[in-house]
Amino acid sequence: MKMYDIDRAIAEAGLPAEVTDAIIREAREDYPDDEMLFELRVIRGIQGELYERLGPEAWKQRFDKDVQKFRAEQSLELVSEPLEIVQRLRRKPQAS
Image (tube, rainbow, N blue to C red; front, side, top):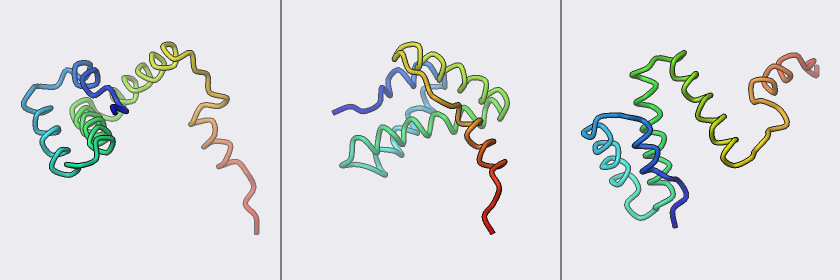
């Protein structure tokens, strides 16, 4: 059973075939019998490679666009954005 659409992630990343082939090969070596962890490892490998190539700011912009696209496709709305949650937690008084 497929949990993640790795073919789509690979296509949308636009990385060279030799890079994605290496990510897939490493993921299969790490998780030969667990398809879900294999797919997750591929997705994380692609994201890591994009982060290295684009840099933090450009990667974040791309990631934010991907999240917005996913939400639109799935009709999802989050109650709070992750950054808002972190900011609220930082402002919360610490118990002594």
